[in-house]
Image (tube, rainbow, N blue to C red):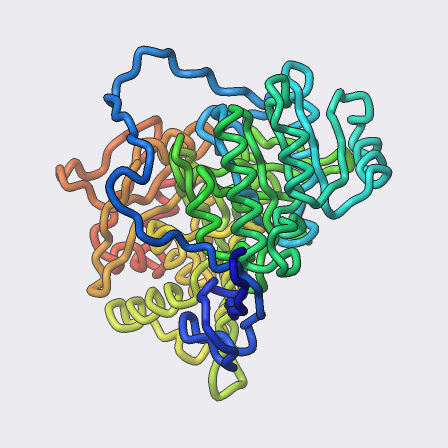
Length: 465
């Protein structure tokens, strides 16, 4: 009989300790160790002839690749790389109430028209799931519902030749294995439960979608190895005060990472947004100072967003720097370059920066747009309603080229913009027409700031005229 012993597992990083200590030696978290009982079943004396010999095969197989399963939701399929791969495991994480269960219930209801789909919830009862389906208008969809938390029962139910093609587990933190004495949601239970479900999915060839809780830092709760075990990790982002939601792929073995899907929360659930740029710019007032349009990229998708800034005299010894949707450290760097290289005085002003629509921008290509918004707010001169801006700023004030310039310009031209301020081309083409836009190349940050002085404003107005 296997011996049992106690061990203490950190609930933040999964490190195992032989005794309880206040601070985890792996991640430094305090009071995160939980006692768990594990059997001493480690194999001993492994040697030649003890295991089964495995066979190797080549990279190119003779059997055809199974087709992806389309969900019918274009934004979801885009993030997954074109649809769900049979036998794959997806992990969907996000803040509470952001819409994870709503989205997956809509996906399974759409796919149930062509494939058998099952939705297993460990958090809601069957009647609660039916109420949600009725609110979304999905009560007639042929989705098999179940409320269960025992992994043993779930595996026994799904381990059949005619099982479902798509299975949703909501959520993995509520699942438990009766062979472990730890509580559901602990590191050991999450890791072991996910391993059993993923192994069954790959053996039977169905897609399993796991819903994961997140910590207060925004990371998926449980062991980090959980994200290594699955094939795709999707984060559902967004501010609940805004109607837009972003589904972002941070890992995908069958498609591109950093791909996003945009959804709008409505009374009938989450509706896909096919043209998010037009929606984000629909309420824009182009004649106000301190605002400009940034042509960014989210994965392979060009995205036009409005960046707003406001500078006001500060009565505080340390002026405020409030940033929403961008990196505050990046803002401090851009302001330092503007002060040191361009002679602008902003140190005594409160600075507020906002990316409209609840989006978050992370690429350095937004530096030039942020600088234009700050200079516009400081001078009171609007950037121009028909102008888009993008480019990376170096510490010496130089403007560096960014990737996928043509895609950004095509998106801007499609939405009716007529002018683009871009980094100077390495080919030295100068001012040119591309994608129907007037291209204004900026080699140094002073070239941009000059457009917001009196001379620069006259020149810019003349260009519009």
